[in-house]
Amino acid sequence: MRERPNTIFAFLGGPQFRRWVFLSALMIFLVLPLLPLAIWSGAFNWFFPSLLPSVWSTRAWAYVFSPTAAILPALWNSAVIAGGTVAISLLIGIPAGRAIGLYDFRGKRLVEFLVLAPTIVPPLAVVLGIHVVFIRLGLADTMAGVILVHLIPVTPYVTMILAGVFANYDPEYEEQARTLGAGPLTTIWRVMLPSIFPGVVVAGLFAFLISWSQYVVTLLIGGGQVQTLPLLLYAFVRSGDFAISGAIAIVFIGPGVLMLILTARYLTGRNQSIGGLGGA
Image (cartoon, rainbow, N blue to C red; front, side):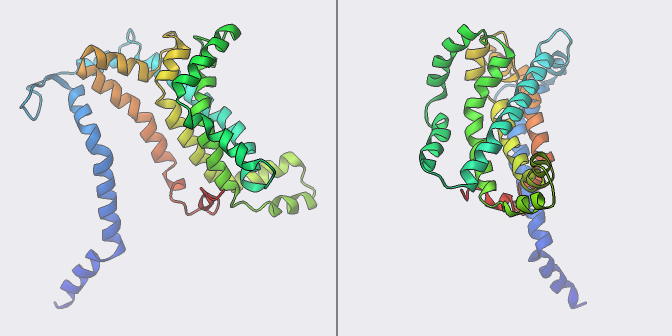
C-alpha cells in the first residue's frame, strides 16, 4: 500500500509523463490554430458574440470537391510545382552543399554570401526583373516558369542545410568504396546518398513547404494563368466568403502537415548526418 504514492510520483517525474506532456502540448499547438478554420468551413451563419455558428452547412466542402470548382486543379498544380521545385533544388543543392560543407577553397565566404543573397534581397524586386526575361524566353504564364522562379527562395535553404550535413560527412567511406572497385555512380548511389539521406529528406521538406506557400512570385510569373491553392485562397479571403476560405485553408494545410508527419523521424537530429546541420 505504501508503494502506490511512490509509483505515482515516479510516473509524474518519469520520461513517459514528460513525453506525454510534450506530445499533448505539441498537438494543442498544431491543432488549436486550425480549429477556427474547421468551424468556419462548416458554418452557414456565425456572428459575434456566439462561440459557435448558429447554422451549420456543408456548402463549403461541397464546393471544394465540386468538379466545376477550380480547387482540385489548383491542388494538382501546387503539387506539381512543389514537387518539381523540390527535385530541381536537390539536384542543385546536393553538389553545391557538398562543395561548401566539405571543402575549403578561396572565395568560399563569397560563394556562401551569393547563395544566401536571394534570401536577403526582397523577392518582389528580384522577380520583377526576372519577369521581363521570362517573357522574352516564353516562360511567363507557364508552369515551368513558376517552378524556376520558386527555386530562387528555395535553393539557398536547401544548399545551406545540405552544406551543414556534408560538414559532418566523412568522405573516406567513398575512398574505401573506390579501392574495392566501385565506380563514381555506384559510390554516389551506394555510399554518399544513404549517408546523407536524412539531410536530403529535411532539405526536401523545407523546399516543399517554402514552394507550397509561395504567393507573390507565383502570381507575377504565372500571370493568373497558373492557378495554385494560395492564389485561390487569397481570392476567396478577399471576397469575404469565410466558409469556403476555411475549407480551402484546411486543404492547403493538409499536404504540408502530411509531409511533416512522414518526415518527422528525420527531424529529431539523432542521425549523425543531421547532427551536422549548421556546422558548415
